[in-house]
Length: 64
Image 1 (spheres, rainbow, N blue to C red):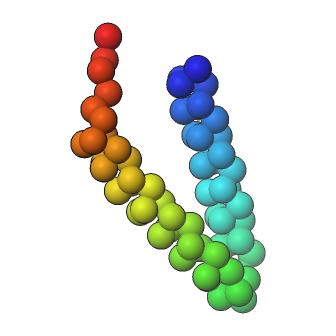
Image 2 (cartoon, helix red, strand yellow):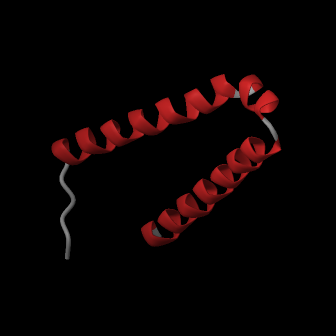
């Protein structure tokens, strides 16, 4: 189940990166309009990394 969820996150990440790359290739005008959205994506990613580190420190996984 966890492996399937990890694969889903990879697919979602690939889709989001593809959309962001498309916007960048379309033109700077759209990049300026969507700059706050891109910034929010980066901030959420950084927060997710720290949340994962804290969760792992509190409840370390036990590998079989």
